[in-house]
Image (cartoon, rainbow, N blue to C red; front, side, top):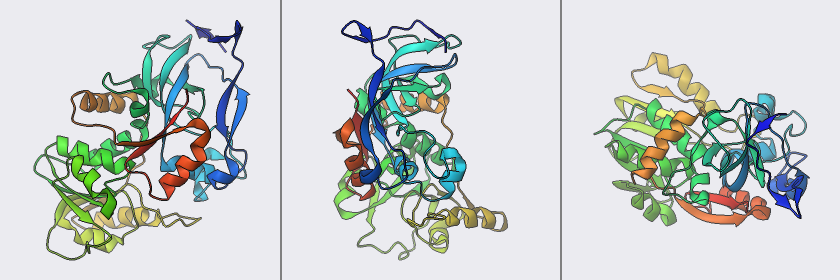
Length: 342
């Protein structure tokens, strides 16, 4: 593999050949299968860059890949019986330490954030098309929690065609994607109502929501209020209820929602929404998030202008990745969590 401008870091005057990484060789609950291990430091191809990881974001997708659930995720290329790639993590913020011969736009020493292969490690490989310069006003830990959740939120907002003056309902407003969706929709001039549990309502208000709903106390099906756009990011509410919350020509975007089932894991609602949408006036649907530098750049503008701030709740050392995933899965994280790799 060819690199240019490589500036390898050294220990005792010898190039570092191994690194610490969070790995799993079998599918299962994070506490059972994840471990901190010494593994070979990755090399890069001509169209890749090598990052010294400073921080990595923690999101629900990492749990799914670690557990191999729901089962269709294994058919998506992650490995039928065991993970094909053993180092976990995707969100990343770090510094470029080597670039491939065909790479343009990045040089050694650049501070970047974006999507990488195996970011729960001291080093990770990334493609330039999935990276952007780190926002100047964010530290590495804050920047690391933006890519997966921020890009997903941005694309959900676009899918729903959110505009100034719209009434927008965000279900799961205190989570990773939801915390960005509230801020992005507000920045566009929409009036946002955020749905969260009692202990997280203050966070949702601080993100810019004009109104909040406590789902542990309030019945969403009650009342006459209707919304131009509903972003369903959490829970597993019936499609019929979500439609009742919409205006006659409103838009529903199902971003997530889990039953913890092993086969569909809640994705049946997305399938039913897409099947029904052509036959009703409301727009019902979902999308698959696209990892790309252009949307990272759009988020950078929002962050550097002060319109969006990552809601970073907790930071864990790399070795505590299983605990971070468990806290996230159990709803103990308000907004986002990060791992420190250095």
